[in-house]
Image (cartoon, rainbow, N blue to C red):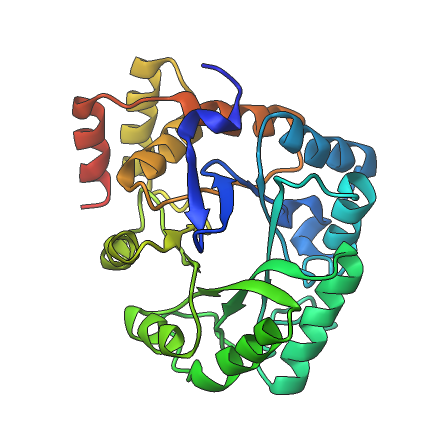
Length: 291
């Protein structure tokens, strides 16, 4: 398999930004528990630079990773940013002293978070900002109105601080409400081979021309599901997680994946999955895993 992020093709965010469907999630560049600096700063720095060298033009981040340290690492290693690179960040949570992830959805919190991202990434405007809905439990769906927080981000977009808006951890109904306030270019929800509660939302996004970007694209498999995935991977001469990523890319042309890692070897394995084409019989077996 070729190690080239462009092998899976590209998609459009808002008809203006073109990103590789194989992206990179920067969360794991932080220390354990997504707290503090990376354990190996040299390796983490090399990984984020290698992501661009492999053709990735889509990096997902947030200023609450660390907090602040991941955005600072991206800035220190990639700025001034190449024209083709799209940085997608998110707001709607903060980090507490006990390393928790409490929601931060008030007007002041959202404005502060956007300015934190601008400062720590060293950009004049953010390419894409996802509003992540959340509560203290982290459950889904979240019984939170999207109107007020998304309206705040829409105002910041009108001010030129944000180019495009997305939503995360939302239902289809919450997406509909957001779209009445401002254009939505991407949805970032939990979704993978084993957990498909958002199947209908994937198809809805495809029909609307909205990118669907699964978070937690790998993992959460039961022993039986892992065994089936391992068997498919062995037949293809690939790693199980490469097959899981390839399944997502073949699931819908609206999907872009953002697997994260702080390991150079894992980064290259993930990117190689962009070139992995799953035959129909393997797809059928994998489809049955989440049935």
